[in-house]
Length: 513
Picture 1 (tube, helix red, strand yellow):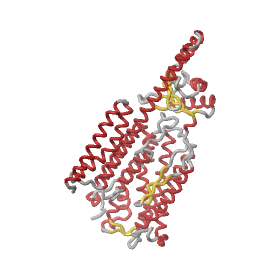
Picture 2: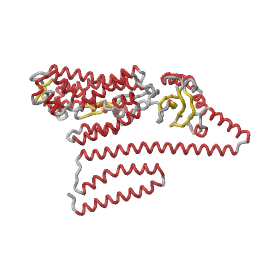
Picture 3: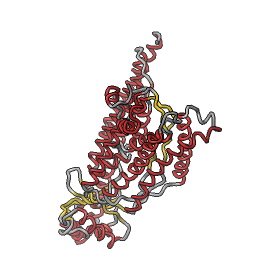
Picture 4: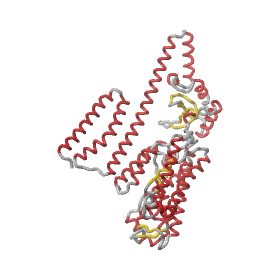
């Protein structure tokens, strides 16, 4: 407990900090929206510490989970505000560039002969009659000659462009789609663009916030870039680290510390190899479907974990995704392959389990997952009513594989589950699902502070995987009903794998007694 002088000092620090924040707000107001957003970023980084020290001075102590929750919430708000700040800054830059170019144009016009001014005006009117805004078109960084060629791909039989808006290094065309199915329109427009400008530009058919189809054209220089040498070194380093943590996880399951007893490598190897079998199947599933859709993938960045060996990997798309069907197929193939291998390992382990098997696990092990509990009940029967259950090592490996697969199927950001939701339901729903998933993980972590696994995974998602996947070239055409059904099945299996059985329900199932 603080004494009087320490409490006074803490309160003075808090008051000074609040005064600095107030002074910063006064200065920020003069810069408008950009200033306020920048000020809010400083607030979200400061307030958690003020809250912590304020509670501390009052004799209220937060445990490590509470502190981590404050930091994660603060970081999440900081990231959200940063995105808004970048968007607002980009809008301000575009307005400034437009004003500057218009000013330069007016100055140049004042020095032109009357007939030249008339010709320039006529050219602008001509562009306007094609459905473009001359004032905005001037700020498009695409060369004028290329822009005219791009405008020539549109027509009343495909997509009738009515407005041209600058966007990043390219341009957005608003209008009306008149060529039938989006897939046919996209194919026609893409082919025409390639015939005119070869491989210099990429055409995206996406949906505007108002729900109308729009066309975005960007230079091919915006395509995903190959991994740099430092990124490749990082991927290899994470691979080595994950091999080490898989051996450590195997050692812990065998009740010894591998790093303190490396001579017991042979004992830990089978379980570690089982974990890597699941991880390899997962990555091969992604790679197989990527080959089918002519999509390149980056090297996998494995995420090491002391508890279960690995959280899986982060695999980036190294080329543009043609459509949402391809996004779905590539995303679902990894968990499908890893999940099938895990189920085979689990069921094989249960079949091989008998009295005197190498492992003895408490019956609560089978209460930790609805799916694993039900499958185990089918194979082990009445033996699940004993406090300790003898199982084959493959049972443990299969269980670990199912957990890793289920974690990657959570509907958040660029996780496989997040990509599946984005492919089926679109970006707006995927964004909401990401927020909901992070909230659920935060609540579960606070409710169960004894198990830090969920909190660690929430932090991994927040800092590494929260962003949605970039839009497909054809973002409008939705996957078919079969794919939607498979996606829902995958999400259902994720839920029943991660949700535990309550003791009362488990006993009714004959698991425990």
